[in-house]
Length: 311
Image 1 (cartoon, rainbow, N blue to C red):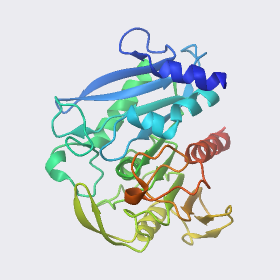
Image 2 (cartoon, one colour; image 1 turned 30 degrees about the vertical axis):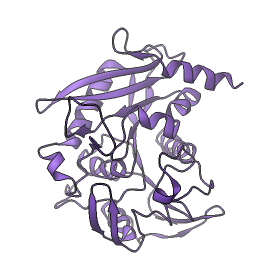
Image 3 (cartoon, rainbow, N blue to C red; image 1 turned 90 degrees about the vertical axis):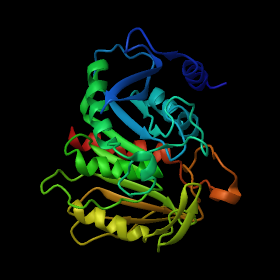
Image 4 (cartoon, rainbow, N blue to C red; image 1 turned 45 degrees about the vertical axis):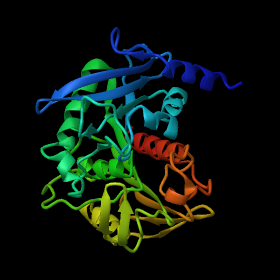
């Protein structure tokens, strides 16, 4: 039996709400944002002494999911244990905060700038939440502030784009998966460019590359072409010459920016799911995973490369 996985699985059963913030395992914290209590979960790898600053990866769950639920889906806690970084799993808001979350009955949704689900998100500033979360995290843990990374799935991917645009210098790189960049009414005039890795499936029913009408549990919407939103993000980050085809692996089309670390992986046949993760819904609803790209591994390699280039 893999002892690292055994330790990680055991540690995940221990949710520490009190005591030393640097203790190994999973801890839950809360903070107040605009009068509302918000929560986030932190996985600390074993052997961390609380003194040496570690990188941090913030993982934003998809619509209807939860911070703790996405841990098993993506295995980010196992990767944190193996590679020695802190993994953070925030929770979005839900319509009935006093009731438990439910995918259909009481979904947790991020205000990602799309304007969708606004009846549930009126007055919710999730970019502010992430900003305050990173400040709170640095008070509780030894964090390398030059190595804070943001990833997310679907609705969480779109929030990752938005936070990177509106929080200049707060994150070293982002890796959104299967969620578009919703353009800002007015992007900040001056902001550091953000290294980006984006992953999506060519068979994703909720992110058609050429756009179209999509239907999900919270409504039916006209979805703009995904590639248009990615080109806009590339332009916002100073990608001279635009996105061009790049060398990739079998079953994956790759687009990249020659002048900046910005890469897009289009996974052939992949549906709406975390590639290489544990599917949360039937294939008839979200499609299938061809198994050609383990997202958590590939994203960490990208983040590690960004760190190496800055040191």
